[in-house]
Image 1 (cartoon, rainbow, N blue to C red):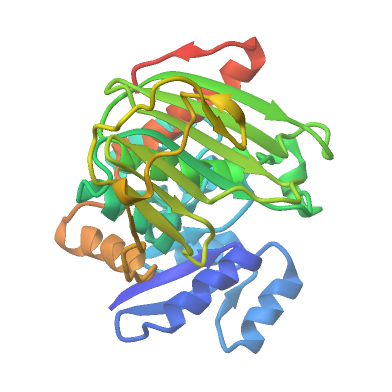
Image 2 (tube, helix red, strand yellow):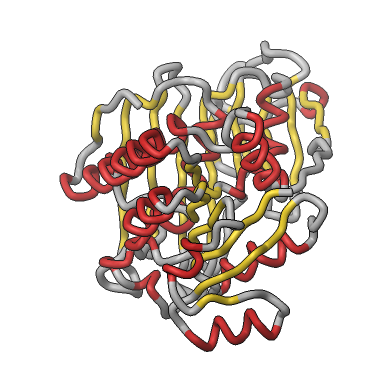
Length: 349
């Protein structure tokens, strides 16, 4: 059984606690700590031990690992403190505010011999796993364009996510998940990053953004996050050399359309369609297209904790490795640089 403490018992910290309490045979939630006394009292009402100070939770020798669920600008300081206190660390995303901070923390992890990883729970989302399965099995051939979107209409919650100094904005919030997913889907270095960050309703932070990634294998990807959109586009739209896949939403509605034949008959002369006279966009013959349902996948987000514990106890790979964390942070650094310079940034990530 692996013993864990939680630092920061707000919404995400409590979510971690509830997850761990559902697997009591594998994990023990030993204690929590929050700077807000009301949250500590709330934890006690849930039957948990709550410490009033960081020093208490760090001094508890029964706690092997800690989860950091605090605003982004505290990740570096608390990660280093926890590692030096002899704790393995699971840090909420984004793992750090920039690559240099992450490299500093990874150096302390190596120095102390304590494991450090980031909680990329969206690797267990069914919509993502469906796309991964389709690409792994070659259902639509070789992908050449992948679109990944998350869209809402309520803006940003009125908390630290609205504050630039706290690491607010959507690139650090949802963007870090979508970038991580994309880097897992495309097995090739990123060679070009172009970002357009917008502040539509919340000055000072990006509440909407579009990010284009070009990979060395000629796959192009679009990552988009909107918080003020009232007609949503599909969660995923993937174009391949022999078909197209679309996942409409997190409920995983959607379909796959495949070409039965890669060659098509072109009518002579202009074709008259709803789009007017055109040859290029004339519809393909219906019998040349096969429509398939999306594949079924199952997942358990609690596997993240299990893989982390296995890494600590048996030396297996961490659920999110150092190199994977660094790649995501380097893409984010390049995205901020692209926005600042209003141009694409050549990289090798």
